[in-house]
Length: 191
Image 1 (tube, rainbow, N blue to C red):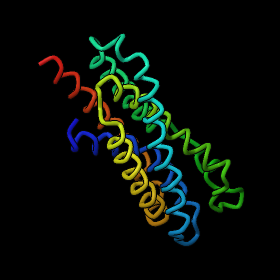
Image 2 (cartoon, helix red, strand yellow; image 1 turned 135 degrees about the horizontal axis):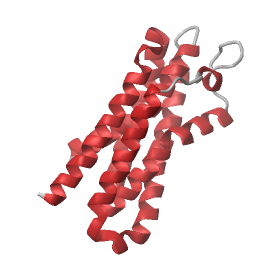
Image 3 (cartoon, rainbow, N blue to C red; image 1 turned 60 degrees about the vertical axis):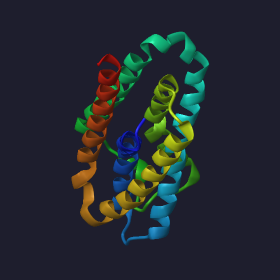
């Protein structure tokens, strides 16, 4: 897989974390870069861990389904991308999860673990598709983790600065990117 595709997948996967980071930024009364980096580290770590877990799970049965692996990768990425687009259209009460009752930023371990896992579940499925496509998992995981860290850290600042304006747009963009990459993988195997 090309570096461009890995970066694109990293960007696509980071959009859920980016959207939640924007919401976290909404809770801040003043910009706190230490909190932004902490949020970026949580999201980046889990976004990198989940495809690694998915890769090792997928490697267990990759030989059994090798002949249809490109179709499976396409369907996984298309389903994840479509779900992200669908979620961007739903009205959510995210502020309850990311802010305290007084509107202050929630950064306790329980809250951050919950959000980190919730925003990275789709990366688990992408990791399975990586196993089916015989991708170098360590470069993929590193790029996904770093991209998510950067997007999430900047997302906190954007949330602080600009508010909820960009949240749903980032989820749509992430979904479209994953669908396009899945389609590209499928077309490359057919043509």
